[in-house]
Amino acid sequence: MDRLLNGIRVLDLSHVWFGPYCTKLLADMGAEVIKIEPPWGEMIRLQVPQVNGANPEFVYLNNNKKGMTINLKSEKGVKIFKELVKVSDVVVENFAPGAMEKLGLDYDVLKEIKPNIIFASLSGYGQYGPYFDRPSFDIIAQAVSGYLRLTGDLLDPNGSPVQVAQAVGDLWPGTYAALSIVAALYYKNLMGKGQMIDVSQVDCMIASCGPAFTGYTMLGLKPHEISTRYYWGIYGLFKAKDGHLVIGAPLGRILDALKSVIGKDEISMEIVQAWVEGRFVKEVIDTLVQARVPCAPVYDLKDTLSDPQIKARDDFVKIEHPQAGLVAMPNFPVKFSETPVSYVRCAPLLGEHNEEILTTILGYTKEEVKKLKETGVL
Image 1 (cartoon, rainbow, N blue to C red):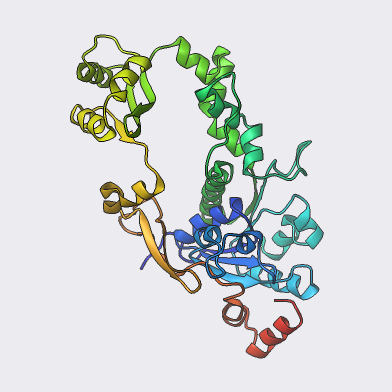
Image 2 (image 1 turned 90 degrees about the vertical axis):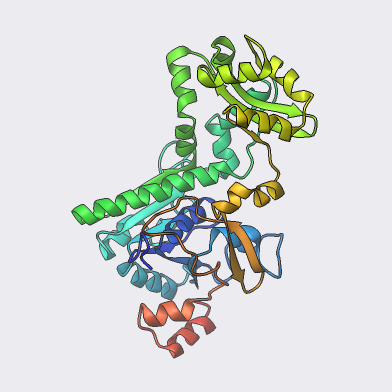
């Protein structure tokens, strides 16, 4: 089967969520991603909870990848990595800035080995600036970008900031990183040149807040201030008898339809809430869907898994894992007519493909691989 990134080899030195989500997207689209871990395994692999030795986050973030262990603090390990660079297209790492330089594997070194290599460095604050060497995680980027405060403002401008679920400070920057790598591969195909890509979590989260910042610099108003000063319809969360739902009805035909349903010439969030709260979620949704007003129930995870639209779109895929068994996880969200995404392997066991990679790609013998294992290189 043809896959979008067939023939592209990625060396993935990343760990936790930010980098692995980036490389997962590349692997799902067909790149050969070799996940390289220290011999003891990366942080998320070792983290609880575990199902028969498999961490759910690791299982999701690393499917479709091959697994290899290399001790990059050993001279032989560095030599093996450099040999892999010669036959690869992309290197992705999210160590602290300066770590690759200490290992003797920074971009300036690797481009001497492979002049057209694409080298993506993922970090919290980027490779320069007064904070460049500060450690960072998702929540740090959410905080510095203003995202936590913007989310809190939706509930109470005078209240506390609110943390967003599911580490968007990793997942969104990881998506930017994958997009940038694909763009760099296209440029390389046109011009024959590689390049370094510097991806900062904070930079990406600021970009994700683009409309808020642009409104603030143009009007001097924050999003919640704009929404209270300028009326543009009904948009938000409402509580019914048995749960919650959302309604989106901007000015125009959709808002007129909502007014008609409620039976009011003028409506506000409070009026809509009063109408919703005396009804069950299904009753409200059925009524508004009939009137072509955008709405949806607020689901729990189990509700999403059982929804007929979600099932029709094959939004979940089941993959057999040797430790965890048959695992259902979100499918790649985009449907390609000619090159559909497929799942060819589950997340690798620690060092699962050491022998395959070293013998078939680099030409090592099985005896040499065995010795590398015995001496702690692998």
